[in-house]
Length: 211
Image (tube, rainbow, N blue to C red; front, side, top):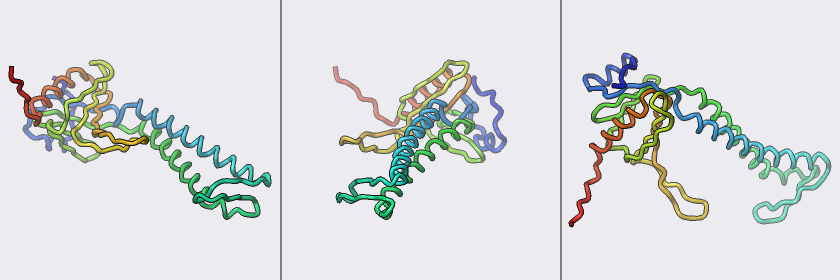
């Protein structure tokens, strides 16, 4: 059984006498691919916003005029009329800050360590920095992905909870909450345990077909 991980005393105490079907320590909080994606997206966002800001500043310093629309009305900015740049400048500055924020968060997430996971018959329990989160198996929808192999892999569990995201061109879609158990040994074995317990605790009634 994949439960040889030594748990922090306060976490072991919280589990109590429940039988631990697996106990592992995640290598990091989220898969490194997600961190890299955030870094790339933040870099592109910052670059585009920064280029727009630099181009505008460069034109103004050269004594050129910048024509644009402000609240639907034509506007012109120059060294003699910098007030027209106030709102566009604030907006571009916000975009630059958002890009830098995503970039910094992506870099930070690479080094963010994961916590401990324990699976019992009735629940999945997570512990990190003194905080404990307990999730009953019935909270998961059964969609599981495994990346890597049984020596070192990542398990991605979808939950029934989540949020509605509105699409750019209309419509909406449901995005489930995700639990990542990242960079762990015995990943395939643990995935089988999770799948079994989720199926056993599935609150959705079985649909019987009449033959």
